[in-house]
Length: 534
Image (cartoon, rainbow, N blue to C red; front, side, top):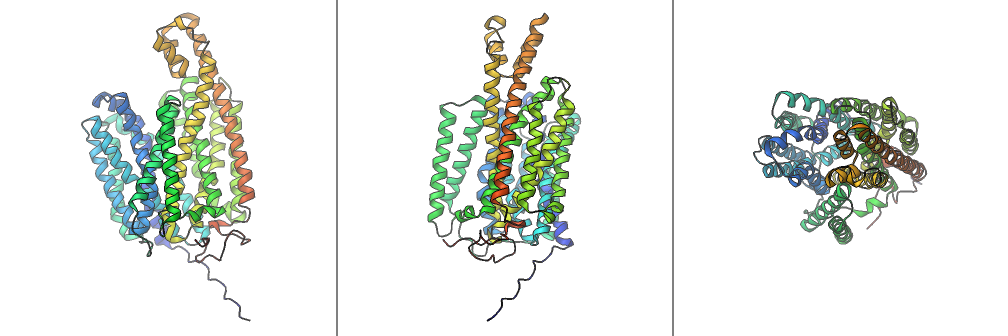
């Protein structure tokens, strides 16, 4: 009776891979910065280019639309032509589009260049994450690397507003787009020297119909969700979501029939992949949903300036970085399911603190809540990403990375739409009788009944106690919606934490099953679960 030789341990990363990780972190940090600095430049852009309300909305949103719609396509393309090659192509395109955006002379030109930035930006996340999957074969090292990858996004969110504010203080609005040029030049110089090339040697030709279906499905659903969040449900937004859902169904049916699908649906049969993906999406759901209320509370309830509100948001970003970096130490002592479940419970505590948020003098309470929530969510983002990417075979790392980031986009959009709609409905219901019809013009009254910003603007026009009473009513209405929404978030986090702890209890770092019950056959590569036969 022959005995199988023990599997050799996976190769450990060297100084070259760790230096390459620093290079990989650059475009990730820039991606996050690009999302934050534009908001600071909007007033200057509005003054110089004079966009219409619709054009201004597209300037802000079109980047995210194209990123979300093309992530899966770019992940598949990277698997085919090479992840490093796609990353460098995307970096060059991002640099060129950044220069074009910086020197845009019309609103339509800026919309077009922002769309090009979105196409180029869609190459960054799947390329960088899939490179990490292949550079760091040791599961423990890969967890550390993904923690650094996650932290680079948080670092960009911290640096972006500060750097953008300094640039706008001394230079025109286009300077915020030029931030990306030296970063991308550095990536183009160092990338070929430090980043290895990986691709699927058996990759089939990209199916253009699948590309069109996936792009149409994601764009239609994300657009519909954003419209619901901004204007409430109407025929156009609901039709857009329905069209996207139908296109997604057709896309999934096509993938099941193709011999070489763009997305291998068998990935979703792996608990490490599907459960982690769901946890990641719902973590983004609650995090982005509560962002809507945090900024309003700091500025409109506590009366902080935008600069001070931004500065007080930095401790939570710092806590997220700290939480991401301590995950590897925790993962060496505990199974991912329990680290993630415990993190979700901690995050639920942070959200639960907002249920009893004080109406006045609540700054320290809210900042503490945000720090606790960030510390709890950081392990979820790191380990869920690690499990999603680690459970897929190395040759499919690109598309697995893209699916992971697409779920993040969907989760954030759903959080803004659903949780924002709940808060808006509560606010409108509370303020319906608090703003009498004859108090001001119809437009001002409707604005005050719709948002706290409108109530603050109207209160400033009213004399005596009337304005103060209106302002107090608006703040109470916002707080009521915020507290209820925070309670919903805490309940969702506790439910997901329990599900993760139960469903992933036998899964080790990187997606490998300790009990062997999840996998149909032994994995061919350490950390990668084997897919069932088609």
